[in-house]
Picture 1 (cartoon, helix red, strand yellow):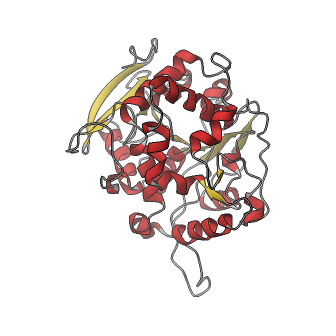
Picture 2 (cartoon, rainbow, N blue to C red):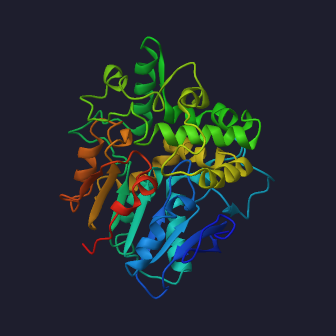
Amino acid sequence: MAEAWGLPAPISSGTLRINDLAMHYLYAGKPESPLVLLLHGFPELSFSWRSVLPLLAEAGFFVVAPDQRGYGPTVSVSRNAPGPVKYDEDPAPYRMFNLVRDVVALVYALGYEKVHAIVGHDFGSMVAGFSALIRPDLFTRVVMMSAPFTGAPAYPTPKKPSLPNTVTLINYIRGALAELQPPRKLYQLYFTSPAANVDMHTRMNNPEDLRTFLRAYFHVKSADWASNDPHPLPALTASALAVVPEYYIMDMARTMPETVLPHAPAQGESRWLPDAELAVYGAEFTRTGFQGGLNWYRCMADETATAELLMFAGKRVEVPAMFVAGRKDWGVWQAPGAVEKMKEVCPRMGARFHLIEGAGHWVQMEQPLDLQPSSS
C-alpha cells in the first residue's frame, strides 16, 4: 500500500491480524530500534504521518502508524456486511476500550513489550492518552496532539455530587447552542447523527466532489485559513462558544459540506497538501465512507459505551507527557478548561506544552519539521 500511495523508501507497509481486524500500517526504521506508535484522527489515515515517519526513523526509532479501526485498508474480518460501514450496524466495536485494546494488541503483534512513545493526533490523542493511562508499563511516554486529553470519566462524590458526565455535558451544550440566534449545533453531535455520513459521503456524487469537500475541510482547520484566530474561552456557555468557527460550532441548518465548501481553496493552492496527496484521502474515503470513523464519536457520546472507563476514574497518566498543536488550531481551546484539566491528569507534562507557529489543526502535515524527537 505504501507504493500505491506514492510513498517512497524508507516507508513500507504491512498488515497484521489484530483482535478481529486485519490492521494495515505504515512503518519505517529498524525493527530492533525503540518503538514509536503514531495514531491518526478524523478524517485521516496512517498516510497523515508520511512526513514524520522518515524523521523518526532517522532519529533511531522503529516507527509504526496504523490505520485504526474503521479507517482505510484496515478491515474487520468478523464483520458480516459487505462494503462501507453503515449507520445501522452496531457501533460497540468502536468504543474507546476496544480502540486501546487494538493498540495494545498491535504492540505485541509487532514483537515488542514496551513502547518508547505513543503519539496521537486529534481523536488519536484520546486513544494515546487512555493507552498511557491504562498501561503505563507498556507505553512509557505519551504525546497528545491538537486535542487535549482530559482523562477518564469521574464518579460523583460527596464533595462533588453534581459532577457532569460526558452525556449530560453534551446535552447541556446542545440545549444552550440551540437557543442562539441563529441556532447552532456542536459538530461532535452532528457526527453522531445518521445524516453525517450521508452528507459527507453519499451526497458527494463522485470522487471529485468528495476530494473537493476534503480539500475544503482540511483547509479551514489549517493555518492557511485567515479566519482562524484561536484563544482560550472564558466559560462553557453558548455566548463563549459562539465565537468558535462554524466547522466546530455549526449553523443548525447546515451540513458539514455546506459549512466548509464556500471556503474551499483552488486545486493546487495548498502548500502542505498537494493534489496528489489529497487524492489518497479522496480515494480511500470514497471507497470506505466515513461511518467507521464517525462511530468513534457515537461511542464517545454514549453513556453506556463510556461506562467501562469509569473503572479508571481519578487515575492519572503516570508517564512523561507532552502536548503539541498548531498555534492556529481551535481544537486546543474549543472546550473551555480542557487544557487545565489535561495538565492535572498528566502531572508529568510540566512545561511540555507546545504550540507550533505556522500550523493549524493538521500540525504533523503542516509543519512536520518542527516535530523534533526528544529523549525526555
